[in-house]
Picture 1 (cartoon, rainbow, N blue to C red):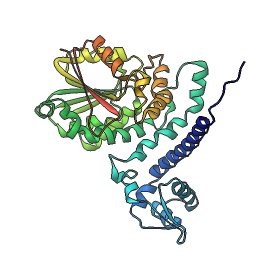
Picture 2 (picture 1 turned 90 degrees about the horizontal axis):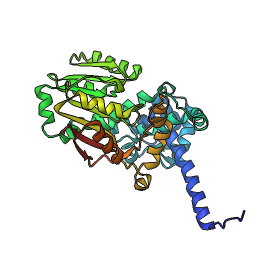
Picture 3 (picture 1 turned 120 degrees about the horizontal axis):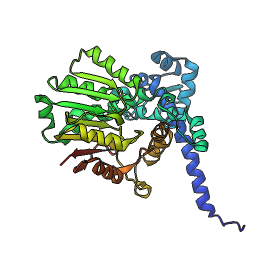
Picture 4 (picture 1 turned 45 degrees about the vertical axis):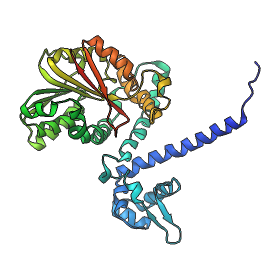
Length: 357
């Protein structure tokens, strides 16, 4: 076979890009560690400090902290004074790396990379033999997802998301019946239940772990107008019961998403609203070339959303099922009106305002 000529300049540019990707990937793992250990939070309150002072402030072992600081310095995250041997987290960086910076804390989202990496061996096996990797193999997924959604959905719920539906906040204040399908750890429903005590809220999720977290939070706050139940969303069999049904990033990883959407349509009152938040993107890969976090989303799809669906012999829609397919499936489920909106500060999500008529 005749060898193809190589554009050497292009090849070298690609090699340079891949070396950059290795460095950036390493920084993401270290960023996750900095978040989970509280190092960023500790450093944000310190002036230039030694590794001993930083480790003491964070309550950690100095030798590990010193090596982590090395990665942060050469990665351009932390500043270093070689004469004094001291380190500093610039306030401009702390604004995107600390818990106090929420909802702008990118370190929260960085946790997904090592989390997904923990199942790489199992993902390789399903590449070779088919099937999927079940939810049970992702031990921190609900914890990380709850923290991440706390910054995206929960933080924006009252000021940005609910106002997308005209009059919805007023109806919640007056008292309506609300269902959240795929409620996860229940942070959104618990928050809404506390804010709108006259309305009644229900959360269904396949995960016992998620439902336990949700029930625990409700009990801690003494919230009585919310209930949570372990339930497969595909078995939703209620008819005309709810004024509002929500799904937050929950449809695309379902085993039977078409059945879930049909069940939601049945359970919604004729004048009700279905509010579906899902990933912003196209069903066609060529339309996602300029997506600001396209590689990240396709990676999450490969390593989690697609595989947990396939583990249940499901459809395997994937994270990037896209607006085109979403509209098609909503119409097939029986919805007659679909309006898609985005928030100015949120490039990652689309909000579908869906009605029967």
